[in-house]
Image (cartoon, rainbow, N blue to C red; front, side):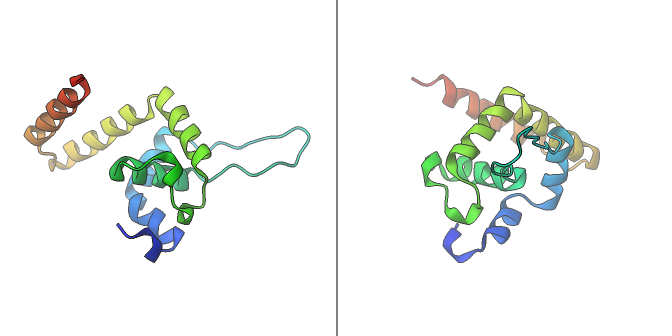
Length: 126
């Protein structure tokens, strides 16, 4: 994945296609930030943060290595990841994706079972 050759918008849409983004928005509604005194920075875009999380989890890089192309800084991405993890967003998203694929009858359950076993085994290793 060559992030330096893609603009931020292209990269975000590549990592979080519209179909995934629509599913994600069903689980995590857009948050509006209200500041009684006004001012401050606007909330970073959820889609940009999600794309950065996908990038980090798929490349195995450290949070601090998020390229500037994403338009969101690593502490924000990490906070959003922690917030969404605590809210069980990832489990709910996986269920929603599995349900959608199941409805279309294009989910290979044997492959999913093998993936689950491998993931579990990796967690249990010292």
